[in-house]
Length: 263
Image (cartoon, rainbow, N blue to C red; front, side):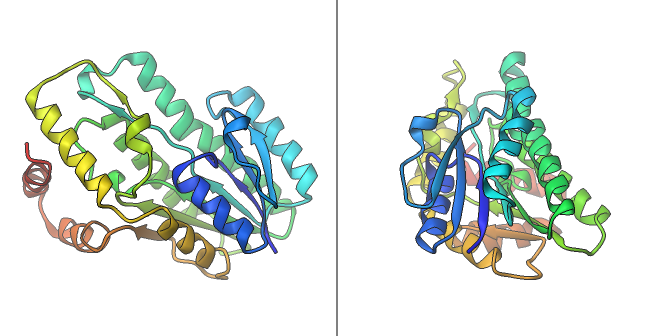
């Protein structure tokens, strides 16, 4: 039985992970900005945590750590989205995105590393996104934030000695959740945005369920030497597209993404 700290446990991928972990007998400290959104499950400790509030983040993590005694696994999963033109994104919204999706999660990584160095080690799983490599049009803030988290994870993987702490960059492709329903949309009604959103929504409706990601997490936490990065999703998005994009020049990447989203 492992003790696990999980952000974004109230819905979507995070909820699926929390349910899968507790069903297997693991003990989970699951966070959400509003604690009443986290379901009451056996083995799930509900924690109120706002990743944008960096002043309280450390104390909340340390409080949970004292209750747990140690965390074998910390999973950075919380996320949100904005759909609109990059140059039309309000500055305040951009800053909020990076406070939550980048700076808050990096802050949590540092607290997790400190506790694991003092203890018996552990694993940190950072849930970034395939959008960090194959960006979605009109979701620049989300793409950039996830790319920052992915590269920060890789930097830590380079710098940390091969010791008792393992880091994994888990990159979901499209996963069928309520993510699109929670996305904040800009005010533009341009035809290109509408066509892109239709493609984004269509892809989401036909995507695998979040249980697929949860099953991968269950496997990861049992591995002594997990892969540094895994991509989870439908076969085309998670396997074929990234393979093709690795060898294409940027001009063809842009052409391919425009065709894929119908713009």
